[in-house]
Structure formats: C-alpha cells, structure tokens
Image (cartoon, rainbow over all chains, first blue to last red; front, side, top):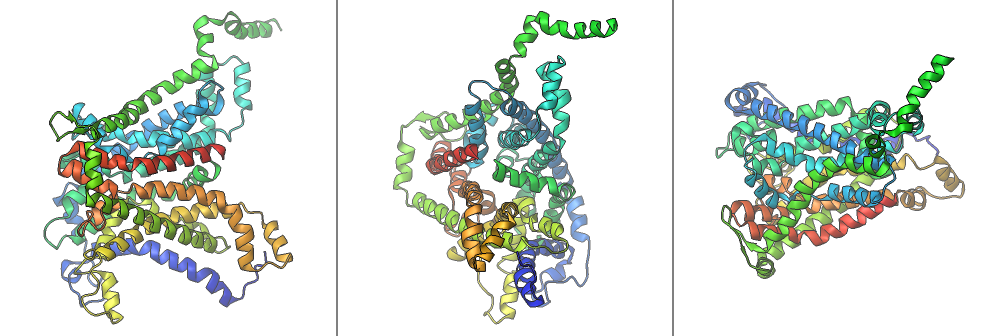
Length: 281
Length: 310
C-alpha cells in the first residue's frame, strides 16, 4: 500500500482517531486517580476546575486501608482468583489434551458441549446455584466462589488450550510413545512442558475473569470478612452520605492495579489468547 | 553391544508383556475418558445440575427458605401478563442491539486506525485494552462518579460550554439512563472488538490491496470489497460473543442504576435478581432468568457450530 501520507493527512488518519480513542479509554482511570487524591474541600467544590489536583492528599487511601476491610477483600480476591485459576488450568488440560490428541467416540460431542458451556452466561444459573450452595451449607465461605468460578473458567481454559494444543507438533509425543512411555507420561513429561505460552494465556484470562466476577460473589458472600473487592466496594464503600467518593475512587483504583500489573507483564500473551479465542477457534 | 540389546529388551518388555491394566489404560478411549471424567463430572454437578434444577424451580412457587410447591407454568403465565416483564424484555433487546452496533462500528474504526505503523504502537494497544481488563464493577463506579447528579465532571464541561445549570440528570432521566448504560457497555466492550478485528486485519495479505489499487479502487472501495469480506467471519464471531454477554449483562446495570429510574434500565438479569434475591421468590425469578434461554440458546448453538467449523 502507498504509505507516503503528508503530515496533515497523517494527523487526520492516525493521530486524531487514535488520540481520541486513547482519551476516551483512559479518562475514567484518570478521573479515578485525580478524585482519589483530592481533599474533600476540593472534591465537593463546584467552582474549581475539576481536572487537576491543587492540594493532593493520601488521606482517602489511608482511610481506606485503616477504616475499611479493603485489605481483607484484596487478600480474599487474590486467594480466590489464584485457586480457581489453578483448578481451571488443571481441569482445562484434562479436557483439552484428549480432545486435541486422541481419537475416541464422542470427542466431537464433548468439544461442542465444552464450547456451549463456555458461552452460558452466569445470570442463567445463579438462582439454582444459590440454592445448591445453600444446601451444601457453603454460604459466606470462599469455598462457595472457588467452586463456582471454575464453572465458567474450566470450559474457557479448555477451549483456549484446545486451540493451542493443536498448534503443537506431534512428533515428540510419537517418539516418546515409541520409546515406551505411557500416555500419561507422554502428556506430563513431554507435551505439557511445551505448552507454557498456552498456560500463561489461559491463566491470565482466568485470573482477570475471576477478579472481575461479581454476581456469584454478591450472592454467596454477605459477610465483610469473606467479601471480594468488587462486592466489598459496592456493598460497603457506597454509603448513605455524600462524602465518600474519594475513598471509593481510591478503592476502585487499588482494586484495578493487581489486574493491570499482571496484564502489563503478559500483554502479548493476553492479546494472543484474545484473538485466538475468536480468530483461530 | 550385549548391554545395549539387553537394555532395549528391558525397555520393550513391559509393552510386549503388557501388564493388562497398563495396556488397558493406554487405550485411547480409556485414557481419554478417565482423563476427562473429573472435569466433566464437575461441570455436570455445577452447570448441568443447576440448569435442570433451574427449570424445575421455574415450575414451582418457591419462597426462599421454604419448600416449593409445583405450580406448572403459572410463573410463566404471570410473566406473560406482567407489563414490567415486557418492559424488561424491550429494554434488554434495545440495550443489546444499540450497544452491539456501537461496539461493532467503533471497534472497526479503532482497528482501522490502529492498523498503521506508528511509534509505541504496542503500548497504545495495551492502554486501549485497559477498559476491557479492569474489573467492570470498579470502572462502573468511576462512571457513576463521572455522571454524579451533583458533581458530574461531564456536566462541569457542559456548563462551561453554556448548557444551563445544573446540566442533564444522566441517571435520573429514563432515556438518559438507558443511553448511559449503553455508552458504558460500549466503552468497556469496544476494545475487545477493536483488538480482535485488528488481529484479523493484520492477516489480510497486502498484495490484495496493491492489486485493488492497481485496478483503480478508491480507499472506500478497497475497504468495501477487500477488507470487509475478509473480516466478515471474525466480525460475526466477535459479534455473537458480544451479543451473548451483553444480552445477559448484570454487573454494569446493577451497580450504576439498579434497574432504575422506574425500571427504565431493568434488564432480564437484574430483574431476575430483584425478584429472586430481593423479593425472595426463587421460582418466579428462575422463570424470568429462563426467559433469556430461547434467545441465548439460539445464539449459543449458532456460535458453537461456527467455532467448530472454523
């Protein structure tokens, strides 16, 4: 393609649209940060220009960390995300490996079922699941969400890994089989070590999805000590009085940071997973 | 030499003698089903069972913490006669249709803008994806503050531009509230479209554009007759994905408007939640959630078949 744009055309075709998308995408985060640093006197003064901070303060952060259970919620969120991601990766491999490598009756049906389950949104299941969790006496325990998050993460990881596994050449496994390794040994010792990039993609996705989950956590976790960040923020930081926005924005920002950090380290894997999920199928 | 052949013999022995259990376990079908059994049982217990139990619940009058009584299709009949139910259905379809359209058009624009060479492109791409990464509840809280009735930063700008005080009540006016949730859903979902379509654009061979240019195609014609047909499968898949999850959206509306004002933004998921968890009518709530099923099932079947073919 001809790429010799003039400087004006380059502004119109590139800088302007990309700049606009960037501003729209990032403004809410900027606004979170600015709000969280403003003292209340500035926050609730309609006359000052709102986009900048004149007297930055960390008061809202200090209040958030000392007067609310925010740290407990963060710990709960991390624990739940890590454990359910681990469970989902293991179960995902157990589904994806046979589907990618073995020939057996019913493989097509199982693959379709996994894809279909991956697409079932939570609001279709939350009412009966709430009853199930109650009957298992798991209300207000982290086990409740650790058990239910994988219902969406396992099919997702299986689907993503299935796509990845199919791209790995078979020769090494065949060689291992000829050397007398059992199928289980072949999978564990030869195949899985080759799939680290796939695990990272699936793992990051599962981790961000767990951090994002709200509905199950809202229903199953009603005590402050077991809440996750999204539920804690909504249930306990939004209060009747007006003057809570600084703390709320501090909470929203701090709650977003773990995901953003992990994401920034593995952004290429994330994008690869994002696009392979829908592009390669 | 003897050592070597001996070791080969030792290696070969187990397979030849084939301890019956080991050989049985190594059969493709046995290995596969044993491997898949734990995750499949797990999914059967926590997805399959709740799904059918939900159907059973929808046929019951089931107040929370009480045993249910079978009432047949009474819950569905109640919904059918309930004006609010139809309002919710209308809201859900409207929300899904407009948000999907905006995400599709905006995502395509984003992909086209990003499909050029410029410095720091990877960084820009990473930043553009942030709305999609950050937990929805937390970014929605930021939007809630942007649209706050008293201290909206958006209204501060509008007033500075001459709009009469106090500016629009974004979440208090039924139409503006619907517009707000649509815009925020678009804000969050657009990067997913954009980055996925960008990946699709990058697979379009440049020779095709060169050939079209030589044949005298204008920029629009190149887009219309080269880019768009090649992107069609990806657009379709992304759209189906997005429709499914927009149709069943819960978080954004629950946090931002709780379905208000006057149920103007009530969607199937939030309405089912209110009836089941707020009013404690599990049976009726389950029937509302199940009302989503026909449309969702259709979408899921189409997408599943499509993914398999791809």
